[in-house]
Picture 1: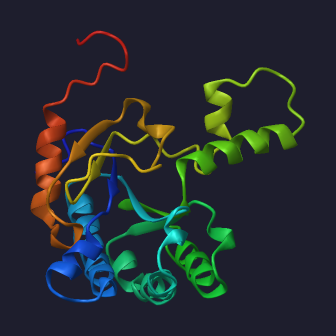
Picture 2: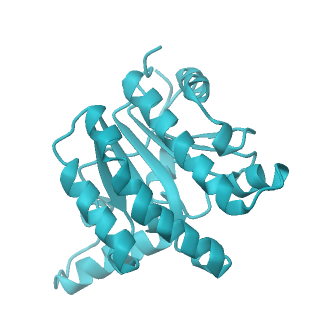
Length: 231
């Protein structure tokens, strides 16, 4: 199956904790399983010709979670991300990190820098991890960048987007969420203006290539009008 013109897919990876709770395991076990699902999903996207995959990994609001869980997630990021370099490079996947990753603790921050540098020449799939990310913060950061530049003219949508973190990456075509929740939770708020939306019941650790096929099928049935009329 090909991507049916689905060029940029965004996924809100939800349900890791619930997956673990259902199995009487600590929530941290769910996050580990979620990292395995992430690899399955990235590989499926690459094999189906999707060029960009944005994954909501850790939001600016997730710092409110119990310290034990946050510390585990930061540790998982610090070790797992860089450990997967062989996987990313073997499959030609470039990794970018979107969000305020510069203010992460030192070890995960170092892993982010090393991984982005080591995969920067890969072209099969760009995996964009949203870490310490929030849509509100992203928009405010772009506005502040414009103000600090001394710009005095009218702020247009084009100007705002050009001051975001990765202005050359095309807008997301479809945003999907696992675990049955039906909200964006501050993910890609600017990008979601005309994105298609999909909500699926399976918990993220259970996702595999069949879920990407389902998303591609669903996307192929949508008519994207961008405020105009269907052709």
